[in-house]
Image 1 (spheres, rainbow, N blue to C red):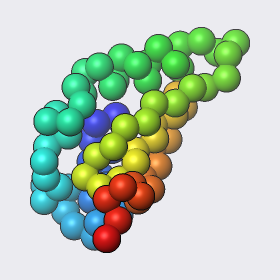
Image 2 (cartoon, helix red, strand yellow; image 1 turned 180 degrees about the horizontal axis):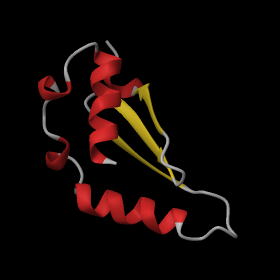
Image 3 (cartoon, rainbow, N blue to C red; image 1 turned 30 degrees about the vertical axis):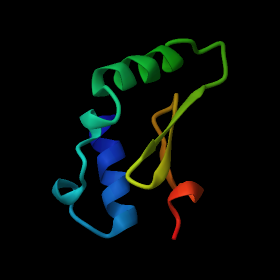
Length: 78
């Protein structure tokens, strides 16, 4: 999931994933993100949840079904 987040941010910025700074692990624990998403997908009788966090000037949303969306974070717009 962490790679998907970095790739989505890189796509939104028009850069290579290796050029995205700071590293995701400086903002959120990648293992915790994986665990939260896994817990959301392990309950098929419930609707998929989501987790949101700010990263690199964007609002990142990761849904329980593994979708990653990247939207500009209004507080970082110039």
